Length: 446
Image 1 (spheres, rainbow, N blue to C red):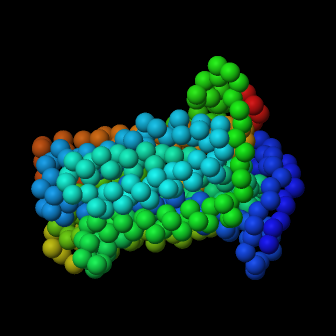
Image 2 (cartoon, rainbow, N blue to C red):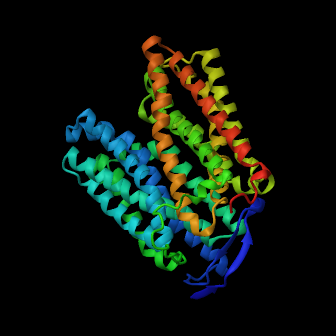
């Protein structure tokens, strides 16, 4: 069945810029009403790439010991296997976002999806550590092609409540991939599907990527590119004249640094201080996941009620959760090997996860809502770049605080020092978002 969606112009929630979408002919499967089918099919196809690219940022951590053992990888090679992926995304994603503006987001997303499946296969069949390093960098480059197009497609295809639901789904998928990456990776390695071991962590992307690629042309409306004027810059920096966008992106930076810094430091604390195994650590991480799922699944409805204040509430929730963890650690001193030690951390972890669920998609919506439709790719690329680079910086900053405290003392103190740094980062996020949501920025530099 084919349906044509007429041009329309609607305002985003909270008075954001009007968004105009082009007339488009979309082939739809039978079933639900046309508008609903377009939305569901588009999101499933686009978010498949978002899930894979985010998952591969975290899933590799649990595979490191097996990779090191089988490929006899040096410490330097392991660092490149982990960091090369994020580095490639951080360097290329803004330019890739601009490519989406120029040639059409759907077309560039398809190229990235195909390349990601190919490079995932290269990772899965890598015979040496050196080949795996190169394949991971290539995988990161493919992810950079996909990442900004996902937000751009959502931003240009949907309007009104549908746009809000799209951003909510985007945040939910990103969080699920981040929170459950270690659990999924551990399960794949433990089950040792077809005897592939750690290689299954990469090869699982291939069938998912192929299915998403097959669905792309029929399920995702075309997003026409726009020819840039002769001599125009590759990256459109005019969006940086919008104070709300800049402040929202700075909020993304402090939140992203806190997010990855938290996962890194808490994993070290669970394994070195509490002496939990991979499975036990994964179960403890699920407390964050449960809190995240509960709030991110209703973030759209919360945002309809609270508007731009949703991200502020979420950031404050993260601060409260981290403060609860701090209080539990200082008051109880969870001991290694005790069954009750991890349990006292569950309330703080759940509240932290719940806060995260109210930050990711509303904060992305705040940034993207400041961009015009023709800037969606560039804006999305900037958001993705900041999250990637801030994530690497967060591991260095919070991990550095943890490591420095470890050289000076032992026990719970290094984790306490890390928690204090994380509380400061998330408090900064709340302040930045609060300033970004001020009505004085409405309509500035549009």
